[in-house]
Length: 431
Ligand code: FAD
Image 1: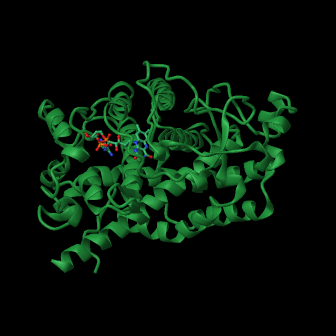
Image 2: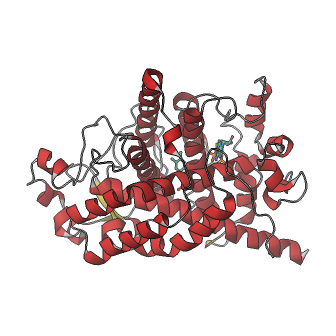
Image 3: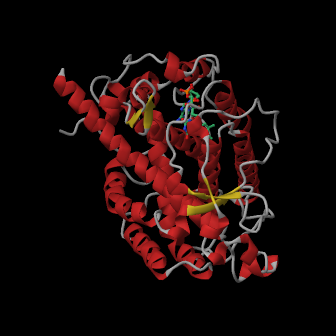
């Protein structure tokens, strides 16, 4: 039984939910296999960088917040800093783009690279993104700072003293998730669905909207570029929440399993968060199909194994056969003002990447940094060149690793939503 499925057009994308879900069915298996390959599972990251914005309150001491690092001996020789260090930085960027630390004009992120002496290698498969228990003031401060200081307005109000999960209202409005009542998700997401959309907002978001005259949807009154920025951040936030709920630790039994109540509270009751998550996936898919050739070339130039190159080629050609999901040409077009907007967008996004060094839980910081780099790479691929061949953009191995893993995170989130629908249906059948 397949109820509670969002349907219809995804705002600011050029495709609907059904298309994205069917593309995801084709891609997920390939992606899942690809991220298990050495090229994609070993990632170098600096987890010791100080937060540049405020003094941290100390890091999360939960066991689940810890990151298991990998000795450099386990890393294929070609990517070790000892090998890469022999390359001159300039040639590393052009002929063997192993890394690129200095911010170049095309970068949307402050990048780290494998030439850095700082940083540790991490086997991503051994450190899955899941529930860690990181919450409270530290995490809300980071999210708040991302939304309030770095996003274009409008932004959700976050009350750190009242986490939505702990103080959430349970089943107060599950219609947004179930598609039953209030016009269902299809209606809720359509133009006439303002009522249900409103029902999906959290208390803080409602409070903010109460102070805004005009449209009920905070993404409706700003230009496309600013909406896209907000949607991408909110979509990432939603995807992280889905992973937390999908791989949740029941502290009374010590068992890890999906937590349906967690999902309903954080995502199911908020259709706009779900929509933003789909949107973020759509944007990544577009970057994959537009710049697939370039990603493959980077693998070839950075010592990927033949089967890894073939795996990525297969992924790219599957994505290429899908309908277009996003039209980037409508963004940043129109002279000097558009260029200024693009510069502002980039500056904001780079700041978000800096804020990731303020996350007080190593595991969350690892995945937060990785996914912001992945999204920054997608934006770079979509917006750094006016031509479709992206010939000016040079990527590092770290960027490609981050991009593919971020795509996989979002793809897995969509698959998890589908599993939560089934759990919800079973719960109702049992009643
Ligand atoms: P939060 O998720 O902290 O959200 C705060 C407020 O933001 C909400 O009250 C709501 O008003 C608003 N909001 C929530 N979701 C959205 C959305 N999608 N769009 C717009 N507004 C929204 N915890 C883990 O257990 N594992 C992890 O891997 C992990 N990774 C993290 C990575 C980063 C970068 C950060 C900053 C935090 C991470 N956390 C992780 C913590 C986690 O995201 C939550 O902050 C924590 O679980 C507390 O949740 P909460 O219910 O208080 O709401």
